[in-house]
Image (cartoon, rainbow, N blue to C red; front, side, top):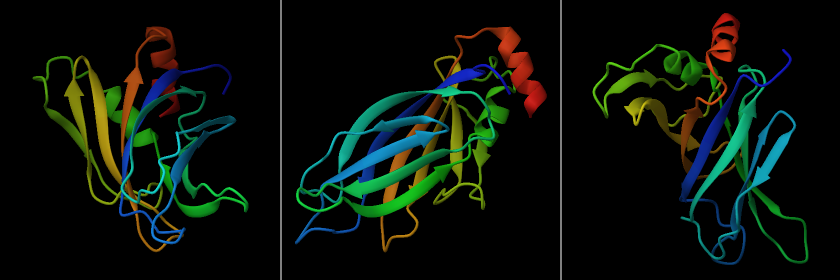
Length: 172
C-alpha cells in the first residue's frame, strides 16, 4: 500500500521486573521499530523497574506491520545485552478505533483485545474511549528472556481525514 494511513502515538510507560544483566541491576532502554521507522527511549541507569514515560509518533503505512519493541541493557565496553522483545499487532486496535464510538460515555471500555500468537499481551488489553479517541492500555510479556514486562499505550491520531480512514477500512 502507498501512502500514510494514519499516525499512532505509542507511550512506553515503564518496565516491570526486567532481567538483570549487570552485577546487581541493568541499564535498560527500548528500541521501537515499525517498518523502516526506528526510535529509542532514554537509558534508565541501574533499574530493573524503569519508568520511561516517553511518547513516540509512528506513521502507519500498512496496518499489517507490527510494532516491535526490543529491550537492551546499555554497556560501555561491550555490545549492549539483549533483555527481551515484544510485538504489538495494531490491526485489532485499528478495528476497534474504526467502530465510530462517539456516543460512548467517557472512560467506557469499547473492546478487550485478547493475547494471541500475533501479539505479546500478558492479559486482555482494554481499549478505552477517552477524549474523543480510543486508548489501548497493554501489558506486554517480554520473550526470549527469563523475566520482564513492558507497560504501553496506543492512541490513534486522527489528523489525516476521512478519505484515508475509508481506505484504511478497506484494508481490514
